[in-house]
Amino acid sequence: MAETKAPAARPLSPHLQIYKPTLTMMMSIVHRVTGFGLYFGTLLLAWWLIAAVSPSSYARFEWFASSIIGRLILFGYTWALIHHMLGGIRHLIWDTGRAMGPAEREWLAAANLIGSIAITVLLWIFGLLAMGGPV
Amino acid sequence: MSDTPKHIRTPLSRVRGLGAARSGTAHFWRQRLTAVANIPLTIAAVVIMIMLLGRNQAAVAQILGSPVVAIIMLLFIGSITMHMRIGMQVIIEDYVHDEISKLVLIMANAFFCIAVALTSAYGILKLSFGL
Image (tube, rainbow over all chains, first blue to last red; front, side):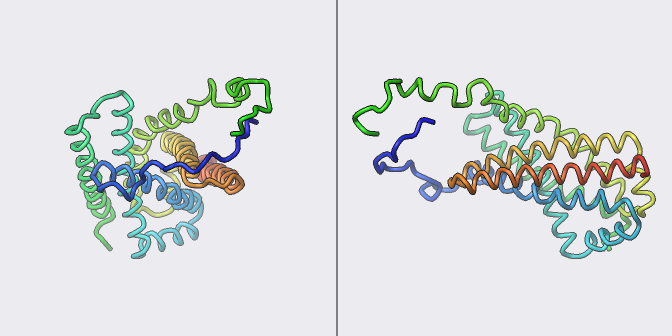
């Protein structure tokens, strides 16, 4: 291995705290945070799938999913999923070299945030109606 | 760096072949590949989940175990767990600089993602084949 001694102390490039927060920057951070959350949220998905095997284990899962805490976690999970998906589409657009101008990237960031909240709320209204009410 | 070189080989020749040459874009590519796959698979999985809301276990088990739904869910699980493994590795490499901690976390990440994938797949397959 090519080992070198620690170089002399040099100034570091500026980090987060030196910048004024901007929408695109916050959305970048939120993309990572939602990805991090979804990672652990897959435990719920795995639980749901193995719980579906027997009535008693499914009843336990349903008890959790319909509790206040469960509903809050699932609502957060839905939003994180939709937000990360829309953010991912934004990244795929950027990967082609498009929509990197100041106006476009601001517009995309706002659309990502508004879109994720709107879709999440619509999905939940639809889901609660499908279940026959919020209770 | 000391002023007197210990090697006759140039710094460039010493690092050649140790880096990410040729395979360095594998994670980048796979992250995009699974990202693209995740879009239709997530939409399909969300539709399936909404369809199953409020149904009893027998109905959920029957629908989840039906061929098309089971295959979509297996693809969904496979794609998202591969995607999240790469994503979490990026986070670990960004923030964990101690070599041992980093290796331990990257291993734990692999174990977690594979465990989630296989546990979920086990549930779906059990419903499908009724074992």
